Amino acid sequence: MNSAGSAILGVGAYRPGREVGNDEICQHIDSSDEWIRKRSGIVMRRFAAPGETVITMAVEAARKAIAQSGTDPRSVNMVLLASMSFLEQSPAAAPRVAELIGARDAAGLDIHAACAGFTYALAIADAAVRAGQADRVVVVGSERMSDIVDPADRGTAFLFGDGAGAVVVGAADTPGIGPVVWGSDGTRHEFIAHDGPWPGQHYLRMAGPEVFRWATQLVPELAGRALEAAGVTVQELAAFIPHQANLRIVDAAARALGLGPHTVVARDIVHAGNTSAASIPMAMDELRSRGAVGSGDRALLVGFGAGLTYAAQVVTLP
Image 1 (tube, helix red, strand yellow):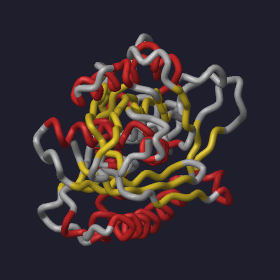
Image 2 (image 1 turned 30 degrees about the vertical axis):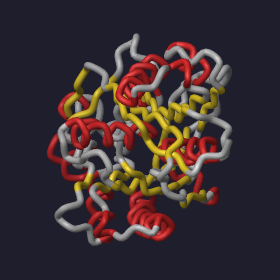
Image 3 (image 1 turned 30 degrees about the horizontal axis):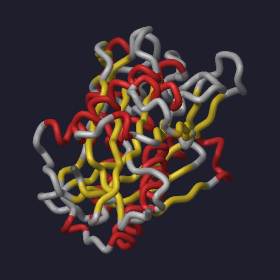
Image 4 (image 1 turned 180 degrees about the vertical axis):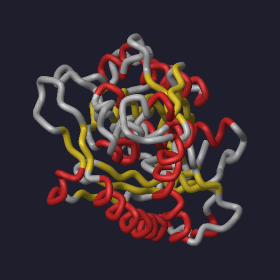
């Protein structure tokens, strides 16, 4: 049976135990703590240990979201996993995540939309619930970016970190996930790309200045379209949670949107780095954990990254 709408029912995150400061990163590149902070806002990031895989981190984040939502894992009938750092071409990771969280019969699908992966997956979950194809959907972003970033690449080594974030999406009488505004630009696919095909050790490379210019122009425009689609004004936002790509991009977008002092801006990148598809749910969890946002608050999510891909929607926080 079709549902009037869907909503986020719970949020969870997993952060690896090992903290990596800028001084450690600078052992491999010609840079400094001061330069990294100035260019990206990053103070530290976390790197996963050998046992902290894309799958195990996704499972831990999903379990927390499931527990917070009060959902019986056996009632989850779809698991969507967004990741750009899962190194196995096949089989997909999502079915293994589903089995490990106790949702053994759930549909499982990996989504490869890079840093926009979570917002893409959230839109798919919303559509599945509204269409009556799923009742409970676990949406996870999980990344081990340390596996695909060259520690000697001065353009990327300092940016990325590891971790996972998850939400549970379910049916709701009042829609809590607004219409998605999304798209892609394949003409600029080379801006963020691996330097060779799989298999083999090939690292992620990025045209930093070009990506920065693209993102600072795109994010405010995309955010404005998402607000319009949801029928929400900037003044009604309690939080702005964009992909944590770079603190300068986050702050530039916040200024361009004209956010008021009452709107909390997620800046999880300072202590987590860029965790790609995991960054938005991890930042959402961080805001909720420290009481910066509350249940029923409206938040604007904006994802953007390799592909180039992008997606945005307004959500009501659980």
